[in-house]
Length: 163
Length: 163
DNA sequence: TATGCAAATGTTATAATGTTGCAAATTTTC
DNA sequence: GAAAATTTGCAACATTATAACATTTGCATA
Ligand SMILES: [Zn+2]
Ligand SMILES: [Zn+2]
Ligand SMILES: [Zn+2]
Ligand SMILES: [Zn+2]
Image (cartoon, rainbow over all chains, first blue to last red; front, side, top):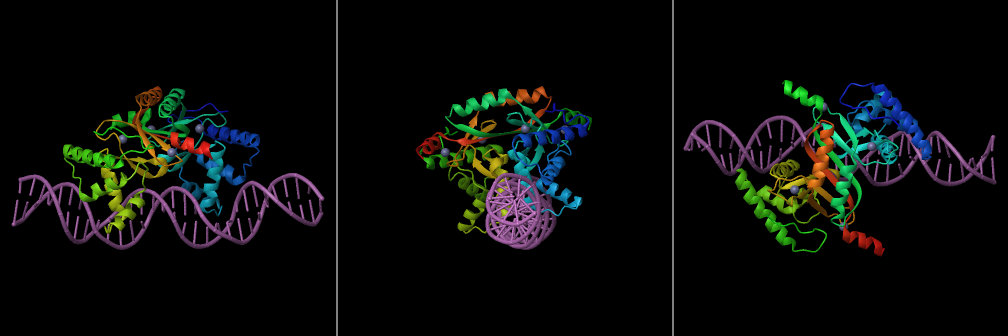
């Protein structure tokens, strides 16, 4: 699977996309799931950048494609992609971003830059452990954890100082 | 300020509400902010239980009150209450819950039971520290952190076993 | 190759959540 | 009490998400 690039820094993003699509094909094959053209196209659109994309943004691009899609088409594709761990929903933004750890079991922690909009997904075992401990202390059985950190990425911190 | 009750367990909830309102009055006074009747009523409604309430749920109760309110009324009141740390928005549920640590500087961690719907707000310094470390490792400057853990509370774990 | 089933998609309508903009009323300040 | 600032009322609108049901497609098997 792909090594994660740092979204805030310039990088060969076409490689990100290509890798994500290749990973997706492999994962779907392994899951006996069908990565249909619509699903693959939606995944590709989500991966257009490291900024999360809203469902209706996806819909708009599909319309430009000439694909006469309605909201359920997009939401169904996104559900599928989430189910197979290929995209994540960012709850605080009502939008979706490609998973940079697809295939690995992980619980994402998202660093969301309010300057440039890019999102970096991390795997942070120490955080996961601390959350697990906190839950256990309350005899609470965690099933799904959302961790979203909004702030400024290194680049945007610098830009901000230049003002 | 109030000691937190455990939402999952029976408790004198009227005391929760009374305490929350008293705290709110004190905090607003300290902030030179006006806890108007509408705002106070919304806070009281949010505190009707430890289950988060949607903005439109609040709106519906206001309508029953005979208060002819529109969505902006509710959203403005909720914004105000959030600003002064009296309620929290649960991003993964698009809904709002009373803060059980009002007045104290804190970053909430929410345990959300998918069985009974109750939410327990914790202050977990170890989690906050781990998140801070993870962000710092990426030179990311955190401003606002959302941590929401969905799962089963002790009571609902037991109920589930009884099925 | 026909046929039958399950998965996926199309289509229409609607629900749920949240915002903008401006006017009127209220409260505070001077 | 007049001026300024804050709060509320109100109408329209924008965005996000789902329900319900018809149709098509992919695939296995007779
Ligand atoms: Zn991921
Ligand atoms: Zn940035
Ligand atoms: Zn709180
Ligand atoms: Zn429960």
